[in-house]
Length: 197
Ligand SMILES: CC(C)(COP(=O)(O)OP(=O)(O)OC[C@H]1O[C@@H](n2cnc3c(N)ncnc32)[C@H](O)[C@@H]1OP(=O)(O)O)[C@@H](O)C(=O)NCCC(=O)NCCS
Image (tube, rainbow, N blue to C red; front, side):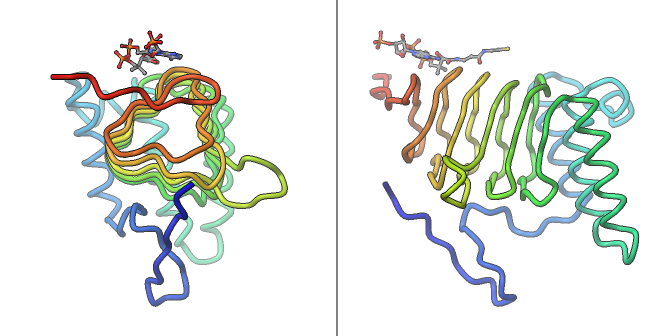
């Protein structure tokens, strides 16, 4: 299994190269809207914010990140919003998880993402996806690099890396690294041969 490499940002916080660099609230929301626009054709912020639960989930994550920076009451507000979002979507996304911009949740139910996970940019996450630790004894969650598709019910467990552009099939259980631009299916997952063009 490839060791996950972390680099120091100089602020005492170790950062994986796949970890999204700091983008502003607006940049993230715009990129989330683009992801929705490209996939569904919906481009109006009002329609997305009012009627698309997946966009509401992404927006809630962005707002949680922003309000947490407000002195004194910020963390409490983030917790309250995280709780309400969790109840509304039956999903639990740890408010400390860094999720890159352009995330798309087509069907935002039953998604569980633990605090140890790192999610890159332009990742698609379907219903029932779990990103978390492999066991209570071993800390650290998966790194999901840019452009990964996590199909319905996929579970990615432990300190593994899913490489850029990889596809994780429905209900796959990923316990080892997945190379970039490859597909993994099954329990435990196997890497599919590349299809000839
Ligand atoms: C992962 C996926 C994208 C692979 O698609 P693909 O590259 O076209 O793969 P193929 O259909 O050619 O299948 C290749 C092999 O993987 C197997 N396979 C494909 N998806 C699988 C899955 N989810 N679980 C287990 N095996 C799977 C096939 O049986 C086939 O096995 P074989 O080589 O032994 O015959 C697709 O199968 C998948 O899981 N899609 C999920 C879609 C989804 O979540 N839909 C819900 C929408 S709401």
